Length: 485
Image (cartoon, rainbow, N blue to C red; front, side, top):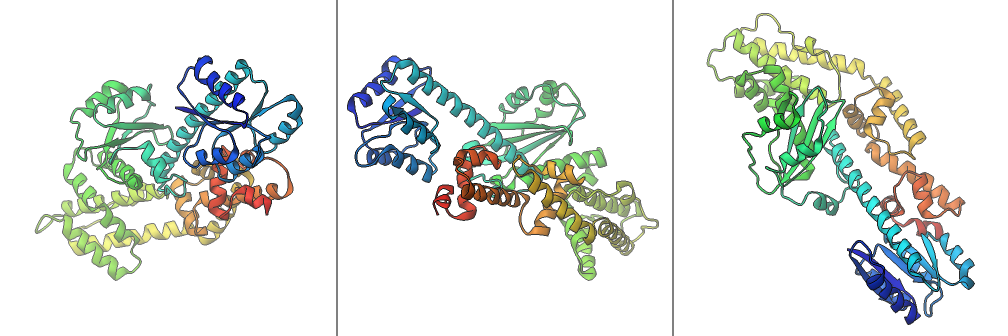
């Protein structure tokens, strides 16, 4: 429903304008008309509802139209504002444009001007809504690819609930060499099993990723792989995650689906190795990241005991445990964006004929890998890297910078950039980006008379509403309050 609020102290204008909209304009979409004959009445309405369009007179008793406009901007109400004005007040209306007013209509109001104003506003709002929705879905992509929190991406629970209204989430990932010809067909197929889904094809990863939102925890479509092949027409390896009731676990679901693809590539049809690796992934990572060698040995022994199902394991069996362990380490390093030589990591040591020797060889190889990583990612290199990243943000804050942009600028993997940035600065790259934008915006608010909408666009935000919300988050006041101070 497209809502319009008309504010005018002249009942003829108020009623005539309302009648035109409801009865004579023949608008191609449903419209609700709200009316107020003074500013206090209008404010009372705005406390309950947010119209897409506000048509307001300037000269009114008690409070004038500028008071209403200031209230709207101060409270970050995302409505377009159009002034109703006579020829005598034309200069008055031009002054209103500097307050962020979208347009004005001359009195007496004719149908053609009014209809054009409403259609233009509706088209603008529809475009903004579509752009906003696409922006949200791209943020969701960043959220599950790089484990960036919804809060950092400014995705509120209200937004997330609107995008994904059902309780459970699953991730389906198909690794393929060619891009699918039609994502809509894939989404249509998946909606036979899940309530809703959103698909992305990532050319660099060569993955089709489908985020599914559903109202039943267990969804096991046995024929999904066959039907996907019929839809896509190209070969792929499929990985389906477990289900979760939290959208904040999307990164875990994505890595879980990728694990299954990784194990299929690494172990083929060997279900024993696949099962052992999948079952013990977190144990392997805990061992790899343990800095105390005695604790590492204890954790490693626990890991081996959990997956060693044979009383007197043969050398071949111990080799399988070794391979399974380091395949998980390769997968982990890929996820955190550290590139290491996989072939070197997976070279089998000689004479793995006892559990003790297996433990010693695993620890020896872990120390080798960690030393190599320490050498490749030294503190000196890290200092250069963080300066490069900060300089890039300072130079490009007006643009919609992504982790991919940052990684391309410094030649590092996005996953590594994401974790490194937090470790080096104590904040996410997005927080740093917002602070740089706010710093530039404060300078403009102090030194220029540019409108807040114009400043928002110049520092990289899509709208004054988005800008005001972020400004208030970091400064605890609105942009207009900051300017007035």
